[in-house]
Length: 117
Image 1: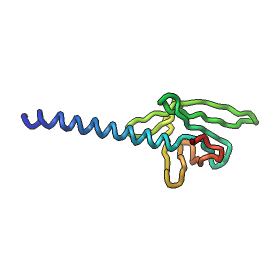
Image 2 (image 1 turned 180 degrees about the vertical axis):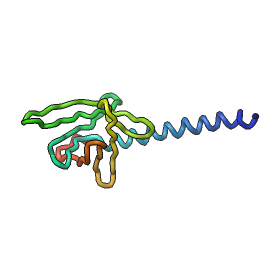
Image 3 (image 1 turned 120 degrees about the vertical axis):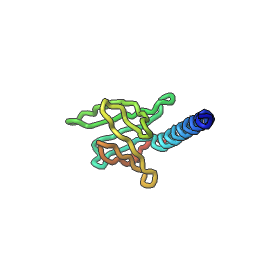
Image 4 (image 1 turned 30 degrees about the vertical axis):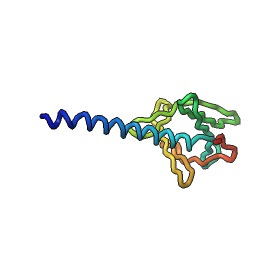
């Protein structure tokens, strides 16, 4: 029992430190993903941007010649990034090919007129 009493605080600190490291990695990944993205078909565009520490996605879709825009928050749960649309839209980034995959939603490539600075 004495061992457990000594071991518990050490394990708790290790867990908290690893969780903080995950958050830092997620923030760095989101920073790399900032910018404007276009779907492979070209009819859907979204911009990922930072609004006072909260990352958001603004999606623009052309429907019958009109552009419709919606803005959603990006959140992290269990190490995965989600776009909070009311449904679980998983957001993954491939740094090698500079592509974002939305599930559901398909693959997106960085736009030529990107917001990335």
